[in-house]
Structures are given as structure tokens and as C-alpha cells.
Length: 65
Image (cartoon, rainbow, N blue to C red; front, side, top):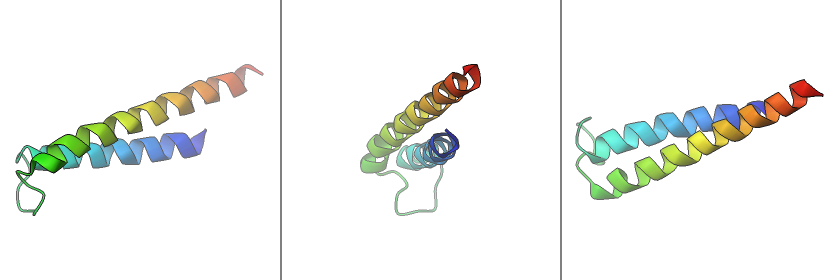
């Protein structure tokens, strides 16, 4: 449960930063303004959200036992 939550949070944060860099909102990097990171970032972010949801659902199931 905790592993899913921690990994999910890390991936959401990475995905958010990569997305913002890809759209050139955060500058100062080779990733800034790159369409690759504007595409990869949201995918990583969604995977992180899915992991968080899985972690929460598993935690609730364990708590119900």
C-alpha cells in the first residue's frame, strides 16, 4: 500500500515538472520547450495517479478486514 502511494506521488511530481518543462513554463533546462517532455510528462503523471488510487483502494480493503 505505502509503496504504491510513495511511487505514485513521486511519479505525479515528476510528471508535473516534465510537463511544465515541455510546455516551456519552467525554463532553464534542455527539456524546456521540448515536445517529447510535453508528451511523456502527462503519461507519467497519469501513471502516478493510477498508483495512488491503487494504493488507497488497497489500504481501504486492508482496513476493512
